[in-house]
Length: 322
Image 1 (cartoon, rainbow, N blue to C red):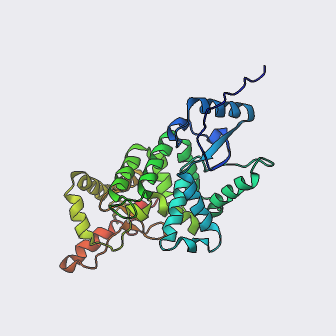
Image 2: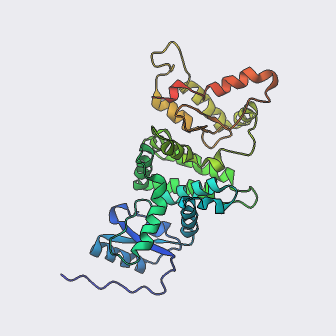
Image 3: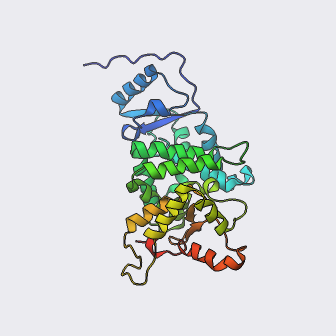
């Protein structure tokens, strides 16, 4: 039977770019995440195109476009120099934000209208992620799951949004969104994102960027670790999370695995429970085992040993490695 004629939308929203995406990668909650919101008529029209061509149009709006332009500069040789100070963070934030949208997984059809523009968008995004790795696979898995994709997009957005009062970002808002992600999304997704094994620098750097450290973790100076721990203990939730981490991730020479509780999954869960707190841990570099909070024992005075003991729970903790 012939296909019905698609409706003709009135005054469709203005978009800066478009390209084609496989139906299988198109989110079910399209009406909720599209900015500006689209009408039911336009949604029906897109559905008609999907049924007819097995393809969806994905539109890059006014929020997406600046990030895409930034990413293009990042991958254009020394183009990042034009971005000025903080170029690395700008590039990383743009990449993280774009990979959390349906843009990730896009395809261009040979001979399509504006094929060159589509390919330019595609390679701008994929030039930085050419090497296949487990961390990239974990991101894809999260994007397919509606809950994981939704809450991950929320925390990325919260952590890269500039703040007039707080400077480059709103850290309390970012940390709150991160806590929501690790508390509500199943460990099958969060642990694979945060603890995916890496054998190359690109993979390790992507893993380090999982919690958007430029906002949630790093600062101009490193505070004293014991001072950060005192702030944590003054908060009922943080104090409980810290106690749980000490229990589940306690190393022991008497255990065959080197970990007293011998429960790798419980240790990872306790570790992620600290994310978003004053003692948020993250990868200190691209090493798998070198993790810790953003703090220092430099000004610990007579409590230097106590401070070092605190950091020992993170640095090269065998319980955090399978």
